Length: 433
Image 1 (tube, rainbow, N blue to C red):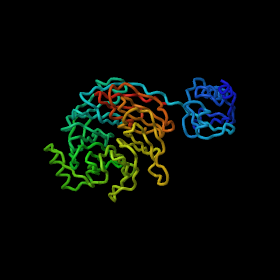
Image 2 (image 1 turned 45 degrees about the vertical axis):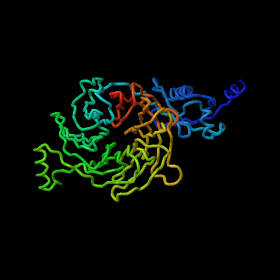
Image 3 (image 1 turned 90 degrees about the vertical axis):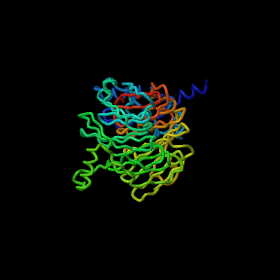
Image 4 (image 1 turned 120 degrees about the horizontal axis):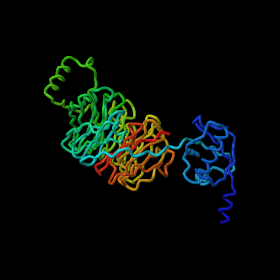
């Protein structure tokens, strides 16, 4: 009891700073109790803001960054954890708290949903019953999932494992799907007539094609497979002016006969000793792969070799790269999510380890608009929303699935979507601070 009383009597000088100008206060230091919590700091900073600006009435909740991490418990414990003296002036950054995502819809499928990706207007999902499905995002935003369903495509001869959009800006939209049937297929969808055509069938893998990613130019895509190989392909994305007369004529004949073009890979990159579970482009000719062989590899697709390799202690199932912070996220077999900086060559490349899932993490995805936020999906049936500055606890658990979460996506800034072996896709509206 005496220890508790002495702790309550200790004060710390803090200086509040913020990057959000509308909530800025003068930078003078203020004394607060060492055992103050996030709730207590909210009271202090709100009082300051209201004193400095009579316009501020309904203030939001704030989060606080202390020495690079979001404060979760008591200030004193965080300062002791990072070796900061209680006698020094502690700089605390405050920012508007990320509001909780809200459930918007549940989209029912006939089998496991193992793949999905959202564009600005459309959601593409892939199923274990070999089908692809297209959904109207406007309908999902209104919570009208049944009416939002636009098209079912009998796409493959085995379960669909991965999907990605290529083009979505015009009425002619392009996407790619991959399957256990060892193929990647390029599709063209005319949204105005709601008709779809298989334009290219990509053959070359000898086992299930587990993952796919399109490069930034939209001219190339990469696939990773259970056969341990990484393959680079052309999307066939070139204008008519780039086609010679013979190619153009051949393309017209093929389309008239409704026969897909047979594609072979531009390059095959060998090196992994087990399945490639995740692939992402990190540059114009640079690809990162995550493998069950406990390694992450960065490949140069121009010279056809490995630029760098990161070794772990467990299988890597998924990888996501953010152009906002240039960091890699991985989902692993030991229940952890790890964050890597591939630019670091000296010392540990593991920047952070995130612990909360209780089973495998087969899917992770960075936000496309907020450099610190990402989502993960686990075999514990949960989707979690994280801030990279809070490794010990997610911001929110998004529940609703009744079985393993197989895929998550946050490509659309306003929607977090997840696919599960409970045969549903859950749509969450991402609250904007």
